[in-house]
Length: 195
Image 1: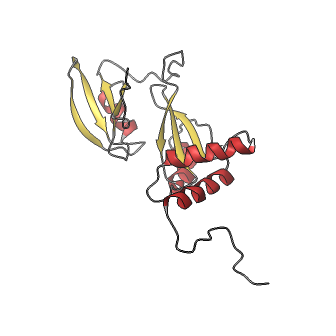
Image 2: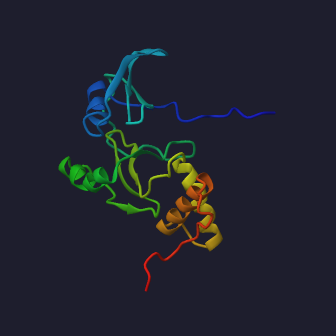
Image 3: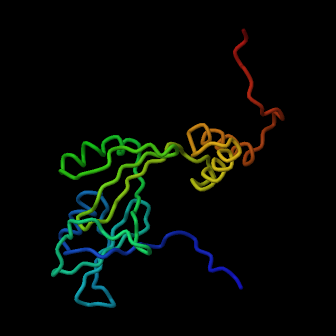
């Protein structure tokens, strides 16, 4: 028996309301360009809108002119989607409260997640949306997942409850040390300022 190895999220498809309210939210609120528009090939009475969330992957939404925005929290039963998170820069994250408040969108306010900052709000159909901003950049040649697994190992070894910035900084140092050699031979921390 062998795995079916995935290589990333191809797209996520959501059930939306009508076409215009869908465009107003995904492009007009979250800034995702509408990049493709065709009928739902399995249900021709529905539209199928494709949005770029910023990384070239796709968020797609089925629309139907007979549906209106639900304006209530979507199901969180077993098997349902709890929330969808989108990456934003720290500059955008710091503006999120003001920009959501300008639209009258209720939100959680900023949440400290140790390794990232988050803010939550619902789309017009009740899907919980998270805007997430990492507090670190991975070293060249490494991914966010590389940093997270290394920080997790450091957190567990220290007996800490959750990942904090100290774990991230040490994880990045460890990854750089393993990835990039040095001619000096002595890579321990040094005090370069004589007393």
